[in-house]
Image (cartoon, rainbow, N blue to C red):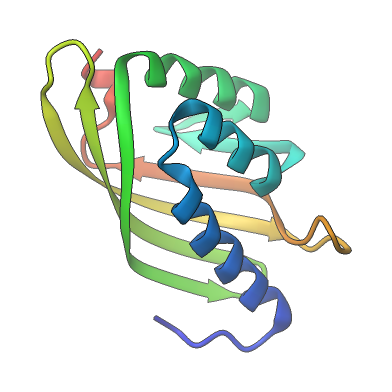
Length: 137
């Protein structure tokens, strides 16, 4: 993991590390984290589709109706200025079949610095995984 040099880079690292600790609480836990992680007008690009923050929340709500998603550890995290690249694993369980898969996800994320108490938040992110959930529904 690259050592961060600036206050913003440190804030991005801390936001991601704390968020991953809080993610595994189901959809409500994810929404709470989402509301602190993303700018209200943020966009998230998943499998080539650009979503507004509300569209992303709705999509995740539908996924949480069918799956549990438990984030694993970061495989890699590179932070430079207001950008980061992260790679991590997600353990996904289908609530209807009990099938479990381990998904590897790569994200590129652009952050914006805000005054305290808001801090750094995502302006736009791009994510790809090796086993997209949309293909499993």
